[in-house]
Image 1 (cartoon, rainbow, N blue to C red):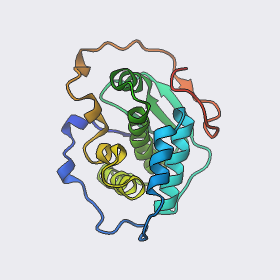
Image 2 (cartoon, helix red, strand yellow):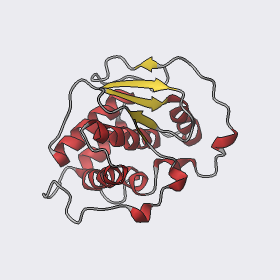
Image 3 (cartoon, helix red, strand yellow):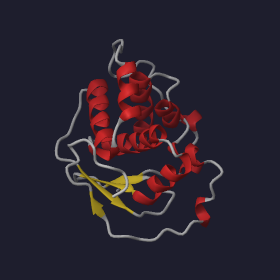
Length: 191
């Protein structure tokens, strides 16, 4: 099982960056992707951008993925169990980010970073170091170096929660939930 590791242990300076990302071309659509992520509605809106950016940069895609929401320990953003079509996203963590930031743009960037990471695992990239580097490369190529998506890919999605004592929060465990119609836009975060 691949799990986003505790990011407090993550050291961005240890990222293995490709000198030339796999997609070796100029990328004129940065403005379009920035606009799309800023305006994306819910999980399915962000998911469409994840699939599009990965396909554009790496030429890879996978059909039939399912997204589940579950109340995981707060140091875990999501996981993809190898050999399945499932990504399980930490509902509690998304709710915390949503309430702390009060910004759809930041929530979308947070969700994008985590879903891209797990989608790359689903595409067969097992190494955490490789996946972190690929998320950074894809983010930089599609959103530009200064966009919040790229900053989160370099630092860590948890940087949005700096100063929030996650260890002291008690999370109520609710049943796991399948995001229906993931491929269709406009599914709201709060269900």
